[in-house]
Structure formats: structure tokens, C-alpha cells
Image 1 (tube, rainbow, N blue to C red):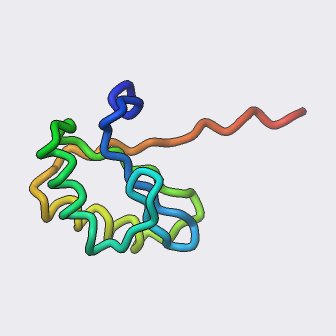
Image 2: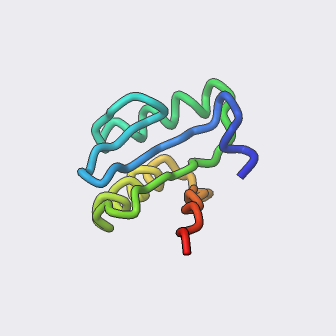
Length: 88
């Protein structure tokens, strides 16, 4: 997703242990709406890029999506990583 590499892209990550990162800062889920509103106010695209560890709990990812929806943003891009090919 080309927009995800923009300097002002709204990147949210969920780790396997349930930690949530807004950019590179560890945050609480309840902080996300304020942080996202601030980013949009400063000119960020009204799109959130969500990166979820494959081992994360579904409930943790769903919680983040719910917080994003509170801001009124429905455009959420899911970022995945391509696994390297396994040796034969």
C-alpha cells in the first residue's frame, strides 16, 4: 500500500501480546481516537493502516478497529508481510 509509507500515514500495530502501537509509540486502545483525530487535523489521510501480528488475538485487533470507527474512519488498510519462501 503506497499510502502506508507516507511520513504522515496513520499506522497502528497490534502485537501478539496485545500491545498497541500508534506509529512507534506504545498506547492504550482508548487513546487511539484522540491520536487519530489529531493526525487527521494535521493533514494525514483519512485512512488507518493496521498491521496485526499473525499470532495476535482477534479480540485485540477488533478492539482497535472499533476505536478507529469511533473517529468515523471506515477506510482501514490491512498491512501484511510476505513470508520468505521456505527452503525445499
